Length: 151
Image (cartoon, rainbow, N blue to C red; front, side, top):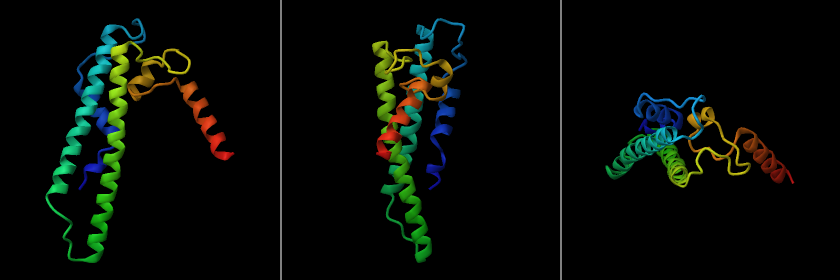
C-alpha cells in the first residue's frame, strides 16, 4: 500500500527538484519565456510523477483481490484500498488541472488571474502551479461560495 502516503505536496516538491537549477525571480519581467518554460517543465514533471504513482496502484489492483484470513486485517486492507482509490481519483482531477495550466501557457494566459487579469505572482505559482486566481480573488471566490452554501 503506502502509495497514498506520497501527498500532493511531496510529489510537487519532487517535481520542483527535477526541473533544474533555474528559479524564477521577481526581478525578471513577469512571465518571460524562461519563466514560462520553467513552469511548463514543472507541470509536466508533476504530471509524470502522478502518472507513475498511479501505475503502481493499477499494478497492485491487477495483482489480485485482498486475501486476508483475519476479518480485522481484511477490513483494514479494504479501508487502505478505499483511501488509495480516493487519492487516485483526486490525482486524476489534478491531472486535468495540470493539462489546463499547460494550455494556458501555450495560449499566453498562464500566470494571470482569470477574474481580474492581474499577475498571480511567482510565489503563489511556485507553491501552486495550477493556480488560476490571485490570493485576493480566490479568497473572494471562497467567501461567495460560503455565503451561497449558507443560504
